[in-house]
Image 1 (cartoon, rainbow, N blue to C red):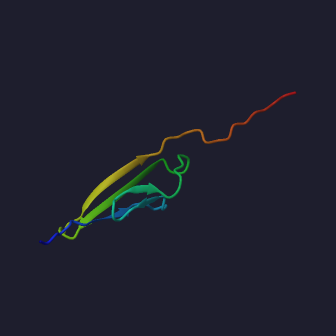
Image 2 (tube, one colour):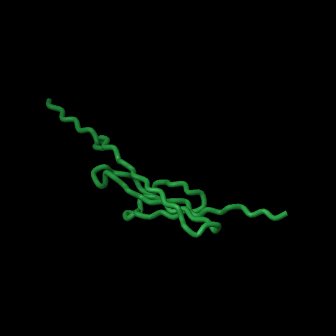
Image 3 (cartoon, rainbow, N blue to C red):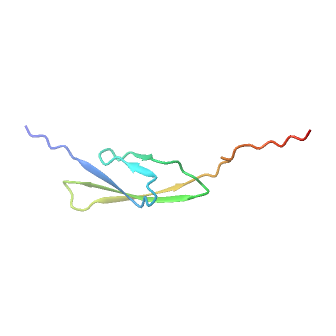
Length: 80
């Protein structure tokens, strides 16, 4: 018997600031750095999936909207 398992490789496009990591074997997307609303509010990424059995790769666009949260330290002014 011969077994030919389908192997898919993934590649990330559009990560200009190198904030994300895409596992090329599993397609799992993770963060390398924290997201900051004050810096970038929307990230548009494209994931390319290709296998040895097809000539044309598949593409999927991911849009990540960063939510603004209060990340400033609290300030207390005491008057005596």
